[in-house]
Image (cartoon, rainbow, N blue to C red; front, side, top):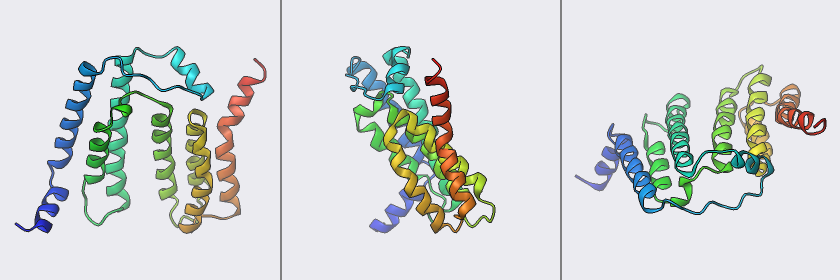
Length: 200
């Protein structure tokens, strides 16, 4: 077999994703035994620090993080197949996602960036759904809404609002109405936050 044939066999194999998931579970299980007191990062985000005060023990935190990564990996594979991001129906993107996360023990603890990644994944989904839609206001509203929800946990996610606007323009779904729907969608979580913060 040539190297191109081996590469194609690995990328199109139906066993690539299960092998990556099993390796990921093995690495995470070993980390629970070898690194039981893995140091948590210093948290400077106010909402996330409040959540961590009333959160789970560290072992349950790692399990929740693993489940969240499995959901993200599943949706990466589904989005690839649904929107035709690559020419073939492959699960290589999800497999590489799991393998890269397994190689870095710092990702085994749930952090604000994990929640932001999860919400931004849905934001990108709605952005792709708006592709060449004449009435794209609802899709862009939801796209920015999920970005706004994620930015409550990880404020730097707000920097992706211009990327969403450029993406909507590239997908030919941006008009004046959908632009303001996008801005309103991003601001809705902050309206709820300010509505809760100021009276209390």
